[in-house]
Image (cartoon, rainbow, N blue to C red):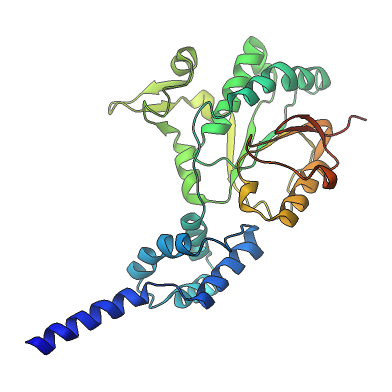
Length: 289
């Protein structure tokens, strides 16, 4: 019986060891994420191990390398999506860094309205949509600003994220009362309806104002017309300096003259490496004309 107990213990220890990512496996995964998505995970070995371990076990793979073989060989892209969904962090909330939305209403939208008085076309891109709070906030500000005139304008916002899993939540547009506690009561009544289980669902009129799509920021930008404003908040913290510079330059090239870039209030841009003019911390503008 003792030997059986020792055998069970050894098997248990061996099983635990299988779950520990090796340096070689970690390098493979972090290199893959950097090459394909620009995401720098080189200092996040513990996080990578923790987020992937259970999924790898449940999928029947014997190691992280076996899982990565499946990722690279799966022509459907399903396993790659799972890898991205598991490794990307999506934390946001309504009214986050509200001073930027106030700037949008007071400064950016009057500029766009004047500039596009003939086309009635507003082109805003939210490049890190996460679970939807940010693009829905933008949509509420637009509705509030344009008021009775909004039916005359094309106000649809493009909202993208690399994670398909989090986009499903955004498209559903269902939030708890706690998630909406900081939203002004007028907006809560106007743009959300309470569900039977006490949650709040974004009304169809609000959801129609946001076009959600999966998009990798490292991919070629698909825009046919230049943008007025780009929200790229709290996402570049995952990129190294070189990747950030390349991304910011792409954004600059796809903005209308006078267009705006808004980043997270805790983020910074290398002023010597960007053509943007700083309006205030975290708000940048492309030179006009």
